[in-house]
Length: 319
Ligand SMILES: C[S@@+](CC[C@H](N)C(=O)[O-])C[C@H]1O[C@@H](n2cnc3c(N)ncnc32)[C@H](O)[C@@H]1O
Image (cartoon, rainbow, N blue to C red; front, top):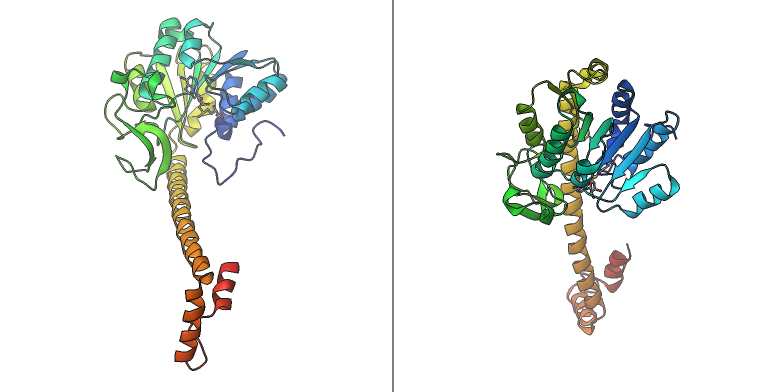
């Protein structure tokens, strides 16, 4: 299948940057990138597209993940040209010669992203900054931290945590029916909370850097230095989508449907649990001599036409 043409399951979250591949590769082409680093490759949905795209262009692709899932390991095996780094983004950024473009899609919290940006800002100041692309710069991560491994973050740099809770748009705390997260900040908003807050704090200290935000699939961010030789080429690709109100509206609508779907799925699970208990009770009743006696008694009372029969209950259970 051609890069960018993969169909994402419409019932899933749409968590992969492969959903915005045309924009992402458009930016890579604008800077005529020779190397690209993806921080946080997960199962390799974006990585595989990058590899296919890179093949004909002589571009080198590297993926970073401290805990590569089996799918990513399998991808690395099938594609020896992929450089897979089993480390954190910070570890890699501290020691690696910078790639032309860096995609940051690892741990979505203020501390991790701030540290990654700090390292980049210090090692490649001014117009030497690589093209940076980010995922998850809109809801739910923009103003709320989530953590893969809370222990990786110094305790005094972490938000108060909730474990296995739901998150919903417009709700500052948590909502049982919201999108489930294993570890998240107990509340949305406030200082040092969320990816967008980290990006804004980084920008506040560094003039000359531009940011575009495409409000689709949880938010795709593109950051570049205005004095980079390719700055206007990137701007041409991404500016038409930057904070576009129609996209914003569509994304708002999409996440509301995602949350509603999640709520329905939870209700269904509860309903199934209830039905399973009712079925269990009916089966025990059917197997008891008390049921036979009650069926006969009700037949006598109703002059031969019982209120309920064994066959009736059995056919309900068989449905
Ligand atoms: C949202 S997924 C990435 C999705 C992928 N980029 C895509 O578009 O299909 C985030 C991944 O980042 C990894 N991760 C978590 N903390 C990280 C860190 N500090 N540095 C790099 N990767 C990290 C997780 O293991 C997970 O596989």
